[in-house]
Length: 579
Image (cartoon, rainbow, N blue to C red; front, side, top):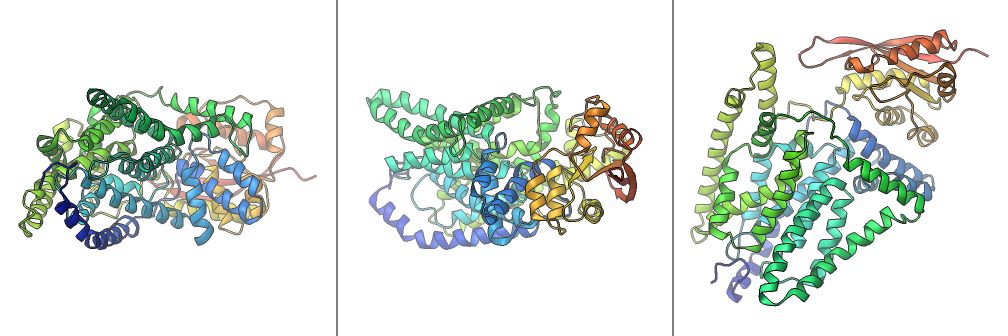
């Protein structure tokens, strides 16, 4: 039997067909394991963050309620309003929540379940790179190892950030783009690859562009090879088929987004350009901090990069290996060069690297396919090695990289943050950026009681930890009316979200205040005590002193912040003067 991944003899194909049922059962088992690991071990002690609630949870809930009210066109308007953070995740969540109800835990479980299915598909992507024919039982190995050695997926799969959903779309797009195991391509696969590429783009715009770049790089190599064998026309035809659906989708979104109009298309183009140009003003994050994220979240075992080398030593000529490598380059290089860095940005870049890593591991396994016990021995050795090496690095990374704080209290916190990335830990709340659950519940309970089900509410001094969307969603679950939610949830409710005083006149403040029945404010005005937001306090004071609004203190909620002593945040309700 040939060892080439693109040339399997008839008896090899027959053997592969014989294990399809076995592999399918293993796939179901793998999905079940991943669901348990990714969903039910998630710590939900932290509430919605800003990006989660504003760009995913809120539009999803608005779509559901508009459809329930029979306002289908209004629901489409919500979809068309997803201009910087695109429409796939809100629509997906809306479908799920229309069945199971609008609830934070429903949304988190829905996205974690999607991630589990994506990881299973990633196991089959790795299988495309395996030398030889049948790879019996290996999807289970790959899926289990992804779960164990990829803390970044476990951390972010149950969140509403868009990196994990994009990763799922990316995996299926890659699976369609790669040639079949017998090396063939078809028009159906080409159109599917294009459709999935468009799907990925409308899951997260910037990552979709990077995925398209990776496919373009791989396509350029294919075109050069095709020119050598005189098959340029067929290759160009294939690229045209792949590009058809993305081009149509982009024309719809950026030119004439029916049922909207040309003005919506122009707005989408402007927002898209602004989004791509954003986050350039930040000071570059040091490479040491980036390396910590790569080595504790993406490759915590250090075994996986070795597997990549192993793969290319054995099979460096394979088109599938080349494709994954080019996609990895298209993601890793821009992400590492960009000055702005958050650990979750590494999740899409990790996906092609994981596929290459486990393909390298499985190719070693393939050498011993005649010895049924050998794959289990290799897997056990890999797990033990990963645990030992990964554990040593977590304990010594701060010292090795020279970023350990001389302050014992800060050093203890640094080490706790690294240790929390251990794949068996579920004691650390999800990294949502929101308040702790008890803190958000404390504020929202007070607000719901003071505002009632229908009052128009404003808020002077909103904080990143408690967004307008989180407030409106919280009120909806605490007896707030659907009419108020649909009327007000998408409207601005603060003087400004920026850390710069707009210097409003009395008339401007009065015009703003006239939109609301009650305006809430906190002391300090920013729940994290950000100095740049302190100016908001003057607008609450002016509301009372200059406009005659009545102020009532509702209570206080204790906030817990790392490396700080707990401190109270007082909540006030301001109401218009009696007529």
